[in-house]
Structures are given as C-alpha cells and as structure tokens.
Image (cartoon, rainbow, N blue to C red):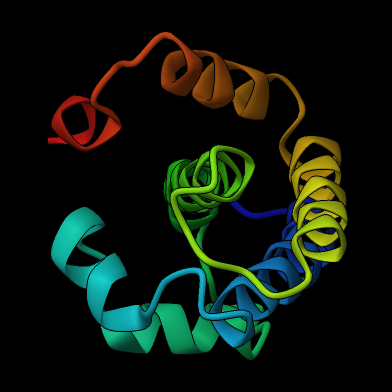
Length: 129
C-alpha cells in the first residue's frame, strides 16, 4: 500500500538520488552500460532515475545505494592514489568528497555500510549477486 506520505518521500528521494546519479554519469565516473553489466539495472531504469521519474520504486532506490557507493569509492581511491590521471587533482578530489557527502546524506546508515564494506576490501559486486 502506497500512502501519500510514501509517494511524497519517494519523490523527494528520487530527486536527490537522480541528481547525484546524473552528476556521476556527467563526470564520466561510470556509464549506464557499465552499471547494467555490473549491477543489472536496465538502461531504462538508469535513464528514468536520472530524469527523476516518480515511478521509480524504493527497491531501485535501495539498489542504487550500492551502485553509487561503489563507483564513488572506486573513483576516490583512484584519484587519491594517483591511479587515474586528473589535470586538476585537488579540485577533482574536492568534487568527489562533496559527492560522497551528498551520498551519505541521502542514504545515511546504508551508505555507511556500503563504504565500510568497500574500505574492508569486500567485493561488492559478488555480494550483490
């Protein structure tokens, strides 16, 4: 049963998650193709989330907690450890840290769990299967 409160909350969360996902894709941290190959959501789902469609389910929002956390963590690690060439390294890191804070603000405890798993070296892709 979806109450008005559920629909309202889902709409607010979709707006935030969609904007963050769009930023990740615009910055070429990952692509819809890689997301589909590694995590499974269809191109349509990724597109609809980027467009902030209110038809997105809570399950999809939950799934993208892993997707966003995974790619943000990977990108931050690569830039911090000079494994990825970046012209403006400090500004790139600042942007990534801001994205990470937005991610943690949106997902709260779920984000903390995902980032902790990544920090411990767990294979998030294997855990998701």
